[in-house]
Amino acid sequence: MELRTVLVVGTGLIGTSAALALRKRGVRVLLADRDQGAVRLARELGAGEEWDGHETVDLAVIAVPPAHVASELLELQRHGVARFYTDVASVKVEPIDRATQLGCDLATYVASHPLAGREKSGPGAARDDLFLGRPWALCPTEKAGPDAKAAVLRLIELCGANPVEVNADDHDRAVAVVSHAPHVASSAVAARLADATDVALGLAGQGVRDVTRIAGSDPGLWIGILSGNATPVAEVLEAVAHDLAEAASALRALAEGDGTATGELTQLLKRGVAGHDRIPGKHGGPASAYAVVQVVIGDRPGQLARLFQVCDEVGVNVEDVRLEHAPGLPLGVAELSVQPGAAIPLTDALRERGWHVP
Image 1 (cartoon, rainbow, N blue to C red):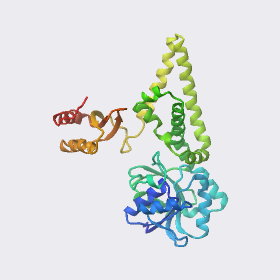
Image 2: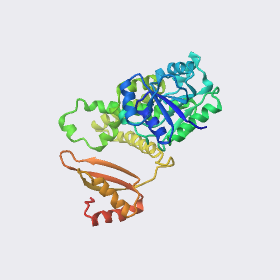
Image 3: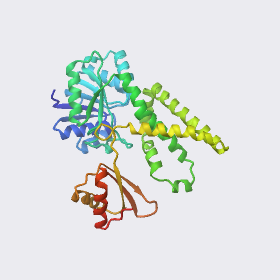
Image 4: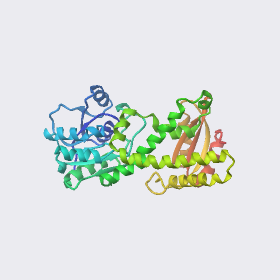
């Protein structure tokens, strides 16, 4: 299935990123959004050209909030805008059910969801590699035609993602566990910082930044997502709340001198380790155990480039990297995750070149 022309309806982060990825692969992309400013910015970024409202396309990608997917789909189908249709909303049951109620043509529609994003929103945050190597769920109904499914699979391929076929109900329960409930939990932790003292904030390290990073996302966008997947998310949060309540009770008991309460806390922490270890690695398989090389790095232009140049010179592949800044100082620490056997050679090479490796 070849896609020569694609209409992207909704030029936010996901829609514009898909448009940029398609343009990179030579697909002609048309853009539409009720926010003309968003369309202009997406166009200026090279995501495509503004749709005139009449031209027909091979595939229409509906990148609007979950509650509006079905009505947008109905409107597009009424005007025969595309041969096939998909959406990229992060919940699937609600849009499919609503599309069925409205009488949409389900033969030409396959719901989908790229499992990729950023804490930033809008076309300005879009990237053409946002979906590269990421899972992209597609949830065809029994009425979906094979050509419609093929068109969505081609879209996923062009965007560099990995297709995962799953039914809508399983999808929504899955993302409640791995995306939606974690976002609420992150927000709950970040909310404690709103009234934190300056002393506490001055002591904030990488741990709290990691836990609260996604809490910086647009609340309006997330209300739409959570509303569309309310029951599965509530069930996960209730289970998390139960664990937290038990942990709080155990800590109260410890404070009162009951040393046996450490058992409950230990079990929760062990379950956390077990869950963490099940998160797939960067290639989708079991997570690898990497060695971490810490390097003190100055907060100056070109420092990261110099650091990676050393890695290249000694033939060490950096599997992951994270930066921790030192508050009030013009330096930080770069943590390079490498294969265990590469840690010592890389450390030696860095020290020989004048880098400070703790």
